Image (cartoon, rainbow, N blue to C red; front, side, top):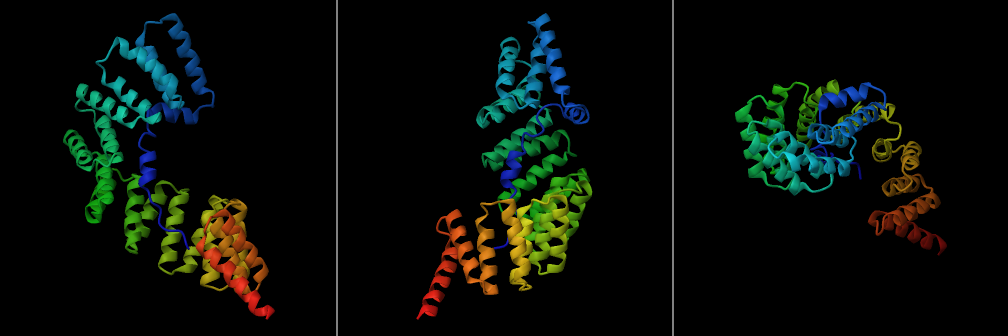
Length: 345
């Protein structure tokens, strides 16, 4: 019933295009007031009014719309740009971002191929295409792209990271580890490479996982995911004291992290047999998510173990309402109903 190691495959896919647009502009936007983008947009709108045939202005505005997550307006501007000029790689790179934002991954891939045909050494485009091939589970094509990028620049940490993800997905853990390790050698601040290494060694219950998680925390000291992974490693390797300490540290960063409350409750219930503390922690998990069926079930089990059949029954019923055909909750309900029948005889 405890939470397992996170599956990062979906997360990786969702993050593919997070770096759309100009990274320097994004950093500046973080430092400046919230209306920075609005000021930029107003300025571009005025310039376009003055020079309606200047496609460079439309291109700049399209990139700004991408940063604003306004794919519709970005696409409209890019269509104007491409009616005039279809020979600039940067145009198709931005177009690929837009297509991905609106869920047209195949069109995004086509735009990237066009970008690369115009600029064969554009490693950003090559690696983004590798990610898209990965998305479509086209692993040989993805590997080919990473190799192509590395021929242009053999020090590309991202290329090794993508290769690591591909090998991981195909079950080749040893090669995956090597790729992630090379990625960290190329870029000692590659957070996600350390995270993946930690997760791979976690599965083996190898203490090296903690070293990699520690490196990840040095880069991002407030990563809830890494704190959770560290706590789970301690929990899975039966170092319950350290697990609890880490869960409580995590809750200092995010007091509404329901899985931490759940696992604290889990340890208190099943390991320490402290039913009062377990009930307290499962209650906190429920307070953060009123539809958390598993927490209701575990609170019910805590009540049952403490001898409070009435509250146990109520929690099992609630769990079964929230999660249809919740087998463990149904078994709990049947246990208590059976106990009641025996008591009434």
